[in-house]
Image (tube, rainbow, N blue to C red; front, top):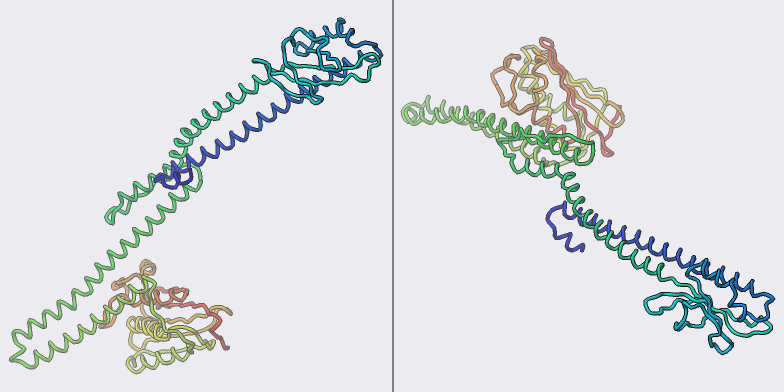
Length: 466
């Protein structure tokens, strides 16, 4: 049966058949209990009736000289009539019939000291034989016989009724179970149908969620939540591809323009040739950096961000990056505030890139003789933070939620220098921080500057020194 169920493709049939089987087993046990209870109850009544009648008869024989002659008295006839299905037979010491009820004529009745059942034709009877050796003038046996045909027929009929009832109940349980299960599992069918109909161009569809707050409703809500995430993911991917194409279009157009220029004038004019070669080299470097950033983000999305981790001094790393920028950006003042010494276990190159992104971003949006402040301190024994604050024009409040989006540039709100950038830096920074279970927060006010705060957890290999 279980092999049959396991081969069924529909879960509704599996549940229906399993529950029908369990229901039939339950009905079988109940019917078996009913039958054995009633059978035991009827047997006890029969035995109690025979024993009570036997005691009554023997009490009447007490003190009588010849019980055989006493058998013909009205008393035993009254007992038979009152009990209706109780009869008597008296045997001599050799087992020959001396006297008996007319009902017992021509019956072959066994002699047994215990109550014993026997059949005579179509009738079922039970008998108890009592030795009469305690009487002075007589020796022999008294047999008390009871007709139990009605009781046995009742039990046989009961078996038939219980079997038919079990069969009907099983059929009803199959039909009701199937329709009930089908109705209960209808949300799953809706999920299946919706999943079949949904495509990348139609991710806005959702399941209608109603009914009791059960597991199926939770499944439907989870499915809708999954569709929400998928829709957002597809939208981000679509926007990402569109923005990447837009970013690549400009350098490719520039390169093509200078190639055409070389083709026309480059062979005759050296100044045109040198200008074109320099521009092509510059755009090639920009494209290479853009592609590397895209590859880094793609690896991060696929949880394949490669790391070469070791224990390093975070303070020293910040000082190293500051020196690099001070050599190039002499118009901006960089200030480093150390509130704690941090030894961090991680990929030093990734965090070097992270710091360069934030410093480069701060310098781009800081005016000449501006000021940038870098601070490092601990949050508690398990976390530390570093922050990069500038006194540039700031970011408008409506743009703050989008600063970490790929290719997002709030051009209208910030005065930028010559290098426009690709708009991927902060997205890459967020990817790196999240890969270490960290958090980034940004505080900004128009006209007063911007501050990025990066919080990172410390593990057992990290150290904090005040």
